[in-house]
Image (tube, rainbow, N blue to C red; front, side, top):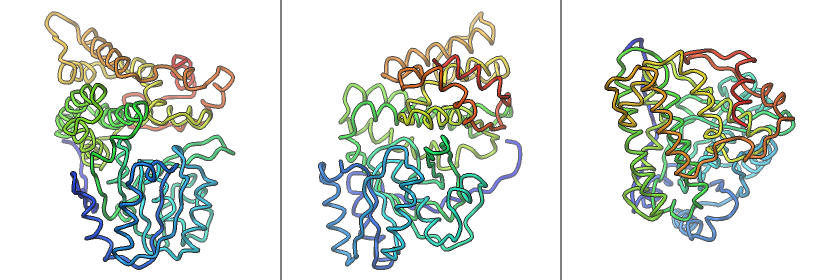
Length: 388
């Protein structure tokens, strides 16, 4: 491994069928006022809401609610959440839902006591919080983003046609997260598959960077093989606990900063996908799937060696008698076939994107370095054009 790094992850996890019991252990550490954040109301139908509220009341908490968090949390909604948290004088923000709810809770947590515009400060200037941060806890009901154990927060500004993520430091990480795989059973197949691909994309965007012999890459390959195996089971048997628990655990480790250590990382698939989402409001994991193959085929000539390794170590491609380039392309072909079998969206047209949106999507794409080729505007246009 090349370079120096520091590793710290302060989030405490409670995992398994009895994980919600951990909430009773954590709540006494915080003040009386709890802002309960959730999405469209599915937790009220599946009983999770009642179980969480019951524990909050048992622990003597005053409950203030902030429901209706959408899959791509907006700046308008963030402003609403800030106002609710201030009115509640919240001592803790408890996010019950998927990654979007967790992302939103973190954005609220750093904004309540901020005396500047949160969008400008955190998502345009990418500054760190200098104010008091309200602690966040998570009860996860959908997996994919890894938001339960990192400082990431993605917010969409419809007025500016931008979807931007800010990866905050460890002080913004959730203080604790509750991970019960059974809570993910009621997620529709489309959302489950979308989350699975979000996990894969997180791993790959850290894996496809650097050329050194890096321990993080070996860990990534193991996580990818586990994910592929469990995903194949879960799409056929959504209530297979072993498969769903492995997927949940892989999602957490895919983006809790561990496998990024010693890596430069390449987040262009996310930047491209988020640009598409800013114009279509499409499901996050599906936007990633739709731009992945065009992007990886575009950069493969600059990273043939790594793509060939990926093909042999993850997709079991036999390299005998083949060129590195042939092995690399065969790996992508096997990955593409698996994606289609899983039911992923493979082009942005299916997500509502039109050719008329192309100029806007190019403009909305943030350029990141760290990969095998830094894209220019012309390159971004070429990749997005190939995604239709």
